[in-house]
Every structure is written in C-alpha cells, then in structure tokens.
Image (cartoon, rainbow, N blue to C red):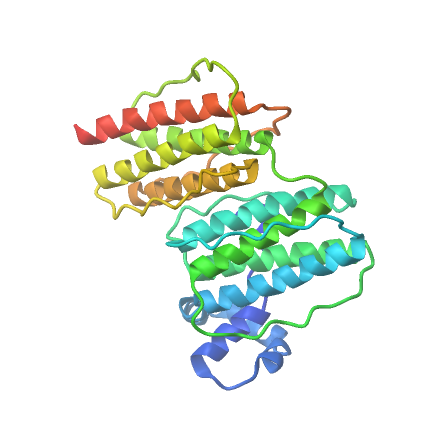
Length: 332
C-alpha cells in the first residue's frame, strides 16, 4: 500500500511475531517492548525479514479481532443504530485476497473519517509483489491506527482488550473478519457501498488491464458497449463471475498457477457483494502483474459520482471484451 496509509507494521504484532520465533514472553509483555523492537526492525533488514517470514495467518487473525474491537467501540460511542450483516465464510482465500479486502475496509474508514472531520488517509493499492501474511498484517495494523485517529478526534478514551494469539487460523478466517469489519462500518459511514463504489473498482480493473495489455502488446477496446434494459446487482455479479473465469483462463495461458474461482452466491446480491467480487478480480490482476514483472502502479482516478447499475454493467462488459482479447493473444 502506498502513501500515508502504508503505515509501518505496528510494534505490537512484530513483537508477537518475534515471540512466535523465540517463544520467550507473553503477549502483554511483548506490547511493552514496542520501542525496543522498532529500533531493531529499523536497524536490521535481516532481522525484519526473519520476523516477516514468521508471520502466520493466526497473527493476522489476531490483529483483525483488535480491528473489530476498535470498530465496536466507535459504534457504541458514536451511536450507530444499524444491525450489521454477518459475512459468510468463504474458502480458498489467499493473502492477496485478504489484502484486497483491507482496501475495502479502508474505503469505508475514509468515509467515517470524512463524516467526523478527520483527514482521511491516502488510499493505497495492492503492492505489485507476492503478497504474504506479513503484508496483510501491516495493512490491518494501518486500519487499526486509522480507527484510533477517529477515537482521538472524538476524544474517545475507551481502550480495547488486545486479542490473544490463537493458532490454527486461516486466511479465509481472516477474510471473514475483515468482511465483518466492513459491514460494521456501514452504520458509522452512513451508508453501505453503492453502484458508484463498484464503478470505481471497475475503472481500477480496466487500468490494470491496460498495464497488462501493454506488456503483452495487445490493442484494447476502449469504449463500453451500449446497455439495454434495467440492470440489478445480480446481473452485475453474474458478469463479474464470468470475468473472473476469464482471468483464471488468462493466468493459465500465461503459464501461471491459476487461482481457484472464488465462490459467489447469486441470491439476494447487494452492491457490497459485487464490490467484493470486483476486489477479488483486482487481486487476481495483481497476480498477473507480478508474474509478468509489471512494476508500475496504476494512476489514481478522480472520485466518481451518481453511477447506476447500468453504468457498472457496461464497464464489466468492457472488461470481459478486453480479457477475451488478451486470452486470444496469449493463446497464439
């Protein structure tokens, strides 16, 4: 993640990572060693790499529990009145998918910050590298720091009881916790995700496609097709799922280890679920960029306004058309 939101991994969790390696102290005691470990991380690349290599999904899960606890305090103190949905358990989630989910949470946190007069952190992107649990942990810690900035602005002194480290957690469990955190922020933000948010994600996907196509020397279609009739979230989800199958096909054609197509329930689909599906598509695009050694980030886009499901549908159809062009070129 770039910019202000790329906050260095808070010392609490690297301490836990160190404890995981050397097993010499308690979680509570580790938190007290914040400054000492920070200096070691800053001064020894080899040590920092060793700590990062020993970050597990369980460490990330622990951090997401702290994130949820911080959001729960904000909801109680700021009077959120909604009843958040509970996310469904997903399978086959990888680090890159969890990282993409942290960006969704950051979108919503930025909305909360705007609402309460806190300067929002700069939005980031998935780093163009092989994403590891340590990267996800760093991003989650950034989210925790952002919730605490809101607490400081609103003079909320309530503190969380830090979660204990429990073994055996998976990235799919991490993903569910992040999804729950995302739903919990809707009442603080004042609204759930909308077609406009999904539209912004489709633009990001098209920007990634442009970078990949340039590497593959594939000319792209530039104009979205005309859309007839009214489109609903279910229609959008169907086409995003179709696009995901095509991305997996492209990965295979490029000689990659293709991802499994994430599950997507096409019943009572909401813009939030469509947004989640486009986030997963962005994650898979990032894997292709890493494989092709494309190190360029995409350029930021201006904020979008008042987009309808039909606008989103047209963008998704353009994504599919361009994926077909790249699949054809990769098959030649």
